[in-house]
Figure 1: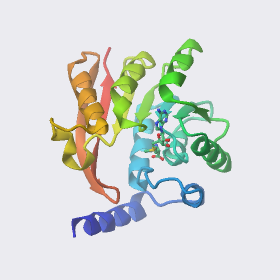
Figure 2: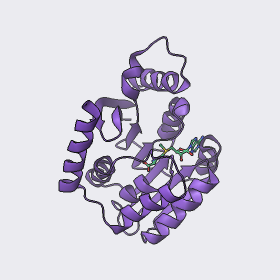
Figure 3: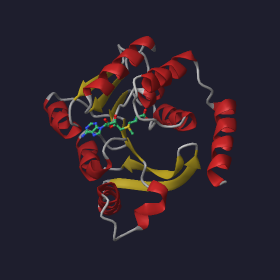
Length: 222
Ligand code: SAM
C-alpha cells in the first residue's frame, strides 16, 4: 500500500543521507522505553531542520514542543559552540527525559528545556529579554499554532525563519467544516500567516514514514 512504500523510501533516504548515530538512536530508544508517543520528526525531517538552521546561520533557536528532545538534538547540533536553543515543553516527564537525552548528547550547555505551557513560558522569555531567535520551530499543541506564530513574531527579527510542523494533517487541512481544534488552529494559522505583511511563507505537502502531512516555512521580512 501507499504507506508501506513511503516508509520504505524514507528508510532508503534516511539510510543514505540522515543515518542515525548512537546519540540520536539512544534518544529515540529512551523515549520509547519511557512510553512517549512516537510523534518525533522522522530522521530525514530532523536533518531538514538541521540544514535549515545551518543555511540560516542560526545562533539562537526557539523550539515549541520538545517531547523527548529528538528534534531538539538535530537543531542544537546546527548551532555554533556559543549558540543557544530554548525548547518549551508542557509535560514534566517529557521535559525531564529530553534533558537526559540532551545531556547524553553533550548538548546541555547549548540547549535548555523549559517546563510549562508554552503560552505561559513565552511571555516570561520576552520579559527576560530572550531572543531575537534566528529560527523558531513550532511543533506542540496544534490548536495554539496561531498564538505560537504571533509569539514567534515578537521574539524574532527580520531575516528569522519560522517553521511550523504538521500543517496538512492527512489532507484534512482543506476541510473548512472541521470542528477538530487542530484543524481549526492550523487553518487560523494559515489565515494569519497569509495576511501578515511581516511574513513571507510557503507550505509543502510531505509523505513518509510519518504518513501524509506537511510543513510551513516562513521568513520574517520586517
Ligand atoms: N518536536 C518533537 C520532535 O520532533 O522530537 C516532537 C514534539 S511532539 C509532536 C509535541 C509536544 O508538545 C509533546 O511533547 C507535548 O507534550 C508538547 N505540548 C503539548 N501542549 C503543549 C503546550 N501547551 N506547551 C508546550 N508544549 C506542549
